[in-house]
Image (cartoon, rainbow, N blue to C red; front, side):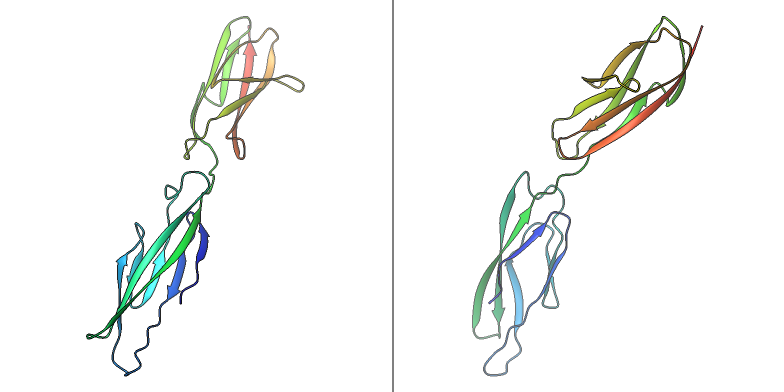
Length: 173
């Protein structure tokens, strides 16, 4: 018998299959049902479920095999439980560029284009200096009143993982 297995998305499982015939006949193992992307080659079952295999939680996939000696056959099933893996948000673009100049008293709009590859809802935490931060959307409008070097940062989170970017702003008259 093949015992149930458990893996995470994007992990590889390999199972060497062995079928014996009491008469000593040659036995071939064929797949009746395989999960999407799984392979059965030279009596080795292998599978690496992608990140889209499961959406939240876990899912059980059943593999059905048949061993055949040319006269008789036997069927077996086994289960593989695949657990969802959360991936970090990805930042695709920022506006303005990471190093930019701003004019004192004139608003600057900071914008970040971020996605979550799992479709999770994103939150944005904007850092505007040592003691100032705001939860906002993917855009922030800021007017600088004093001259000099400033730093703005944003952290994008899906609740488990995060990604961030920073801007270096030179405020001039």
